[in-house]
Length: 83
Image 1 (spheres, rainbow, N blue to C red):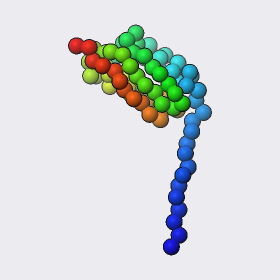
Image 2: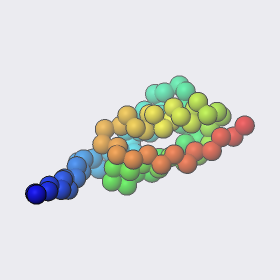
Image 3: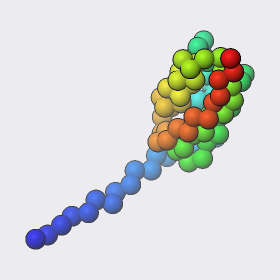
């Protein structure tokens, strides 16, 4: 019996600073996310979101916006909700 192991890894050609700028710009365009209170860190294709928002809906929207940026493979949402 013969086996096959797929070890193909896809690496997007996106610079972290371009990814960060893309997400920051998207936050500013999105009325549902308070861009002043959310920071974006990018390393490779991974994004970390930090800061505070007013609701769960705003937190989820921030994560959704980050996922929409081209080249994002992982989003670590560390945004806190400030009631």
